[in-house]
Image (spheres, rainbow, N blue to C red):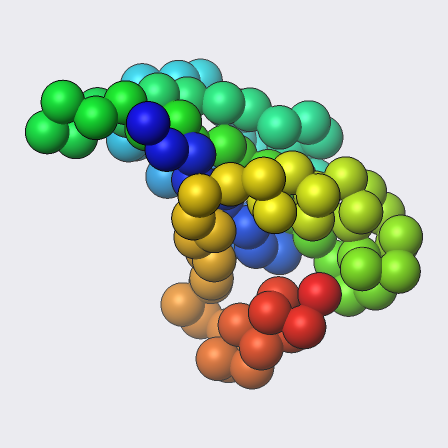
Amino acid sequence: DARVGFVGFPSVGKSTLLNKMTGQESEVAAYEFTTLTCVPGIFYHKGAKIQLLDLPGIIEGAKDGKGRGKQVISTAMSCSLILIVLDVMKPIFQKRKIEYE
């Protein structure tokens, strides 16, 4: 019924969120860039089937092709909703950087 893409910098909790919400087993580790490909999971809400996508972390310059930025951005743009996942211990300007990319 819908597709939600988790977008954020590396190591902000995208995989953990996917795992907790769907029971999926997206790899979680204490180092950056653990997720190298899109990992899907399914979440049901009031009878609606919602696909959640754990996308690889993006970095500054992603829109210009740095890292896997263009792949991540194009996948995110195919989603019904983009959920920006942030590290609560980092300043809010991180959100603006993600939006810029």
